[in-house]
Length: 388
Image 1 (cartoon, rainbow, N blue to C red):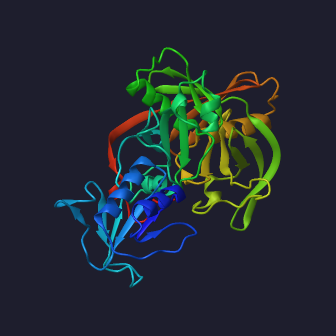
Image 2: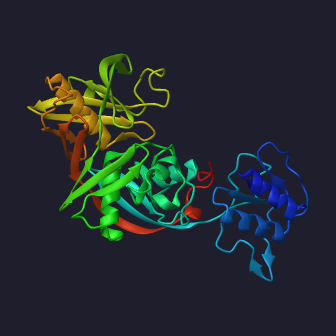
Image 3: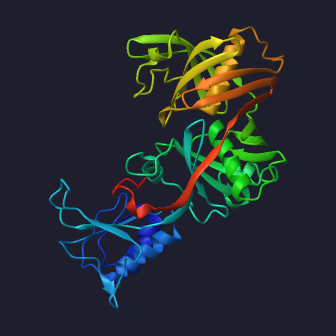
């Protein structure tokens, strides 16, 4: 059976190889003899249409077919499904298209990311949520809090990327660890900037604009520290969050993505944060990042965070900004005249500094480090985890 998550691609397979066992969304599986031509056609389509995910099932215990003695699936991973619960699938071979992707691993205060270079939009292409989740898996993948795809704005058709053409050369396509799309990531954009300086020849002496779904962000560099102008914080009133039987009032702050900031007596009050904290689903239909905060001293706070789509992380840049705003307001700051005050925000992974200089300018500063680079073979990711 050739299963293709792309209707147009499925139809092409059917037209070119009508004897295939082909299935696609909304269409009944059709049976006939397997052929190497079918396999070759399916793989050709999957490689040219990067949003097509191809899986080929061979009947019985038959090995993948050959053409002239050469496997039709050269460069493609396959595994026998002996452990399948479904007896009809047991003993067959599941075959998936393999991509070899260059990657880098980096972090900002231990909020870690896999960065995929895709300068002209052809090396990586569309990111299936399942592929992102498999990459971020800390046991079966590389492991990360999210994935950053680095693509030029001129080569990407995301509306945010298109809108930024002329003001930013690069677009940060950010995905949460579960594969969901996210607007912005403060630590992620600083790691992104470090990559551009270290690997793309960007001059660190010149402010660097980076396009994101949360707007264009401007980065500056000072040795190991990277600062990013996070723009305008939006104060959206009061809300409430809960963990188990306990609940707290919280401040709703948007940093291009939603945050609920709750002040607590102890960071341990939040428990293990395995599950998303309770929140108002009407107010946050797509989920919310929740920060739990304690005072450490004058203009000095500490926080824990549960990020939507990623779980508890060691740090969150936009979260640190939201926490600073909530703390400054509680300390009597005027949003129209914030006075340039800097707060130290301690996170489990280190320290971030946030300065609210003008009503429309909040600057996040902290370290950004690239620790590794290599090549990812998507065929080695856990079977069944790379689809959409």
